[in-house]
Image (cartoon, rainbow, N blue to C red; front, top):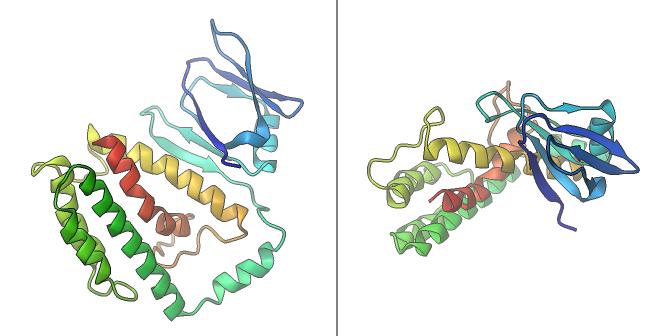
Length: 231
């Protein structure tokens, strides 16, 4: 079953649980409930929101991810369940012991899928998609030619115009993309934990301060969907 992503942004929202239901109380609105087992990602975009401890316990126990935004309405943190799968230890060992060739082949598949998705987005607007599709076919194990970056240099101007510059700190379209990527990242991180893998052990992303390296790896092919929605 495909789980839902829900966002709470009404000022003064209060969340609690009763009988395996998430209870939502908002000023001047009727009380609402949602089945806990239907939720995959819960986004709280309200600095005045309040919730009981049971909200976190029930959501995490059901395998959901809780994503919290800051005063700028951008995601600032998330909570994931620790025990995600019945063979978690076995999969942890396999992930840690994965050889360098295996990791490089995985990254090749990820980059190829990402560039193909970028080409598919451009095809929606009849903008230079054939060149990107050709680049995707040339991606080698580990992407030593950095075709991911080369594709991005062609992709962004074609999608958003010659004056567009991808900037994680900028406003406007960039802020919209950042938000969409963060929501997807939370969903991917939840799926990683649910399958018994270590979210901090990536195949390409390896920053020591990043607890979600694998999520950032696996997120790459899905970024173009956010780009398409932001166009």
